[in-house]
Amino acid sequence: MTTKTSELLAAAAPRTVAVVQGISDDQLGLPTPCPDYTVRDLLNHLFDVVVNFQALAGRREVDWAAKTDHLTEGWRDRFATEADRLTRAWSDPAALEGVSPGMGLPQETVGDMALIDLTVHGWDLARATGQRLEVDPAVLAAGHGFMDRMGDTGQKMGAFGEPVPTSGEPTTLDALLGRTGRDPAWTP
Image (tube, rainbow, N blue to C red):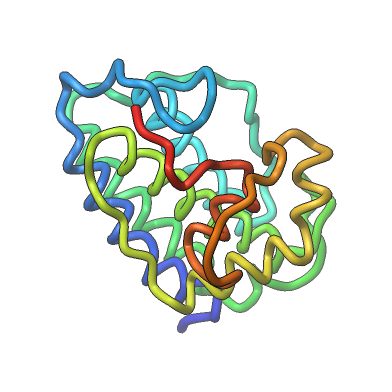
């Protein structure tokens, strides 16, 4: 069984996993486009994203305040496993029904949040470590759709920074990054 959300996650996850697996231990202290986050900090946050959004697919509550260091022995392979589990968790059509008890949002929106986090933080990590992240056009379109619906709310809640003006077409990755408060021209 699949859902639109799981299909989009299946398109996005392997690309972010490839970036994560390309990060060397000596890059963990590098800065990222996320202010106040090193590569290590952002990897730990992204681990929390892939694990917590699995629970949210099953309508279980999560603790975003827990600060676990996931970067222990075998973390790259564990990240790949958890990203795969994330995709499978959202493949059940029941995962998209109703409202999330933990988030107070439609489950479909929660699934979109997982997708946008996986994609944008994948770009953050790629940019910080000298890699490239190619984003599937369907994932990009879904990201823009999410920002159309939730961008202002996300900004008010502190999930996104002030939009950064970008040049070019409004449907590009650069435009999506700008909408989430990132400068697509950011360099370490």
